Length: 379
Image (cartoon, rainbow, N blue to C red; front, top):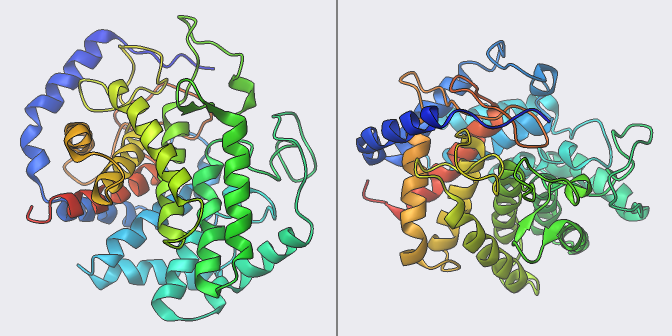
């Protein structure tokens, strides 16, 4: 694992910069969303600015782009410009609503969130037909493997990956299963997604710290100060995934109280870990002096703001955290709309530079902005 710490002096400069940039927090969320989305849309044909695992970025059905398109659906729903919905529908038609190539892998199901949105908009059953075929095959022969993170089987990096054995997966797949039930009226899909979400939670969730290990390898690993390693983005994926499930499940679903309790527990754990500059550290228990990181901040602000907007989280407790996080996100946007400080593709805390950007970071920003708009509709 690469060292994720940077000099304390750099953090001090960043914190000062965020404070000086406070007026940017007055920018209307929709305006900020559009600036960031427009920059990304203008760069969808050239990913040279991405420094790691560029091959994973280029596939529109992979998880990296999927997280971006999920955020784009929230921007499109605002109705501020038809070009956003048009862009989403164009990529769906171009890919013929296919999922990724690995039949069982959660990362290759994530784009289904966007195809289901297209179905909601158009009523065209073709938008979910391939999701349904894939999921029907899984239900006919559901994987029974352990969630232990051990090497490999054919078509998978690790033997556990036919199931959701890493925290990121709880954003990628469960809400697609629940959403397919919403679109088809068949409750079997939501039942499977709900069951597997809680199987993963039972395995990876630390009931003392109310945070998730990224995967089973981290149960015994320690950071440089002997602390447990809880990855910022790994937990942010889960926190956003809770929102996606609550959005997809029916209001009377018996698991809703359990998801809401989990949201409250995680919120109480992450709020005090926010840095003075408004970000969350890449290693949540790694202490002060770590690099800023915007993908985790985006997903955390999204979840916290959603929780306040829907009465799950206490407004007085969490609004200061949300406001500081949103101001930090705005401070990371360059004048041209490029979002910086995004940790690149990985599975643990790592070094981040201001110029680092990624599509899932943009997706997280758009999700956060969509809930900030609801918190501050007059802005």
